[in-house]
Amino acid sequence: MNGASTPELAAAVSNAGGLGSFAAALLPPSAILEGVQKIRSLTSKPFNVNLFILDTPNPDHSEIIRTQSLLAPFRTSLNLGPASMPEKFCENFQLQLEALLKAAPPVVSFTFGILGKDVVSQFKRAGCRVIGTATTVAEAVAWEEVGADFICAQGSEAGGHRGTFIGDFEQSCIGLMALIPQMTAAVSIPVIAAGGMMDGRGIVSSLVLGAQAAQLGTAFLSCPECPIPLAWKKSLLLAKDDSTRLTRTFTGRCARGIVNEFMEQMRPYENEVPPYPIQNALTGPIRQAAGKLDRSEFISLWAGQGVGMSRQMTASELVQTLAAEIKSTMSNMLQR
Ligand SMILES: Cc1cc2nc3c(=O)[nH]c(=O)nc-3n(C[C@H](O)[C@H](O)[C@H](O)COP(=O)(O)O)c2cc1C
Image (cartoon, rainbow, N blue to C red; front, side):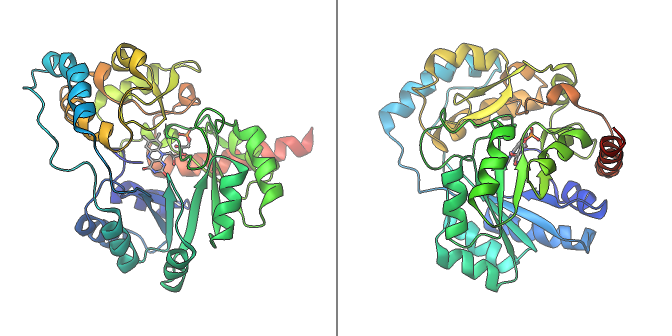
């Protein structure tokens, strides 16, 4: 989880029996290598490293100037000076890919796009298992065709960015309950369910529907090891079932977060802001400053629809609690 990920958190999850994930999408190649080395020093268990699949951005100067004027009131509110042109919009994806291949973690996962067959084969030859994120059956089939080992089925409940890369975002917002059985019927590789699961009951329901594993993000945001601003943590604990919404306004890519002032004020411009990663770079200074000042109204408070079930415990306790809940849910079901 970008902005919410450290080698320590990933290693803690792996050491407790889960598959810890390290978000590398915003990191330069050298930091990817260092992050993987650090995780290896903290755990001997398997772990995953995740990247966004991105094309080289093609910024439109006039669009940027217009967006910066829309964002100016937020900068003023945070005592930031006038915006300047970002030095870069994102890391070079090809160089990130090379670093990841060199680091060769046990598992690699990708979202926002799809890799070519040759690149998937390179990772497999390097000893990595490859996970491709899919929000529809067509995307899952495409990942299976290029040789992925697993599909991460991202339901519309999920916190953070949508991984959609074929077709339109709105039509690809499929609830996990409908997505898993249709996806598992269409592909022969294992499906990992993601979205809205916060406890053992949710995980068991995904397994019953045909998933082989579950991926939880929001549930780990409340762990003390998770390095998000305090204001975000407080918002998680206050949030309810209807506190989140999908928005493009923070980054230019559809993502689910807790509704706040930034999302409300930018709502009229949902479809006008530039695409990811351009909008992400333009709002970056606002979100960072707001994070430092604990101003939740301007932070991208990514969270899934299960956020109202957030619990405060360490990552290790959470993995152990989830495992115990899975066992008790299954035995309760058999006794009914
Ligand atoms: C704060 C946050 C950051 C995320 N960052 C990433 C990311 O960098 N890469 C990715 O593939 N998915 C990312 N996701 C999505 C998760 O992989 C997963 O789909 C989602 O957390 C599952 O839904 P849940 O949040 O309801 O558990 C993120 C989710 C959150 C909440």
